[in-house]
Image (tube, rainbow, N blue to C red; front, side, top):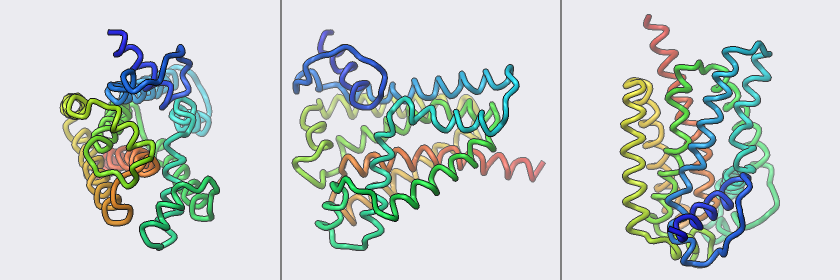
Length: 258
């Protein structure tokens, strides 16, 4: 039990800014950290849902309301996954050989394409969030947990581009088989929840997640020879844009047909 508690603490310490008690980051304590990582997404989804409910009862400017929705994930995680999105944008835009792209991922400097990607990403996210109503948020709230479950599954399933990277270290320390089983259970349960909330919008979110996951594997293998921490951040960020975008697109189509 103590090892599970320590794994929970490590997961939230690594992937969120939520204050956690100190513990020893030993390989033994990190064994099940990825099993608890999706629960950071559950916190984000819960806060977004709560803010949406508050928005129904408190009069506020729609722009302010949407900006807070947009920033909840950043506040909770500290933007750790956005760093991977921007590093990947620079690497992919370089059109260099595999080794050079891996070097760019490790470079702490932000290039022009990272800046452009950041602006486009938040602009798109703002537009999508401003279009969503509470019915859509019922579907999107569990998606923050789904994206992390898929990312954790990829970490213990995909080949690693580096033997000394953060993803490789996490994978080595993890009980791989148990993490895979846990993530499969999470994904199946979350898929069921999404379809139960709304079969049509839930399907849209799941299809969006599946397409991004497929492209993530294709991109990682073709251009990098496996996954890295930055690519995992890219996947999480893009997945959390595409899922609500798919839901909003379906709502618009349904509204036009009605």
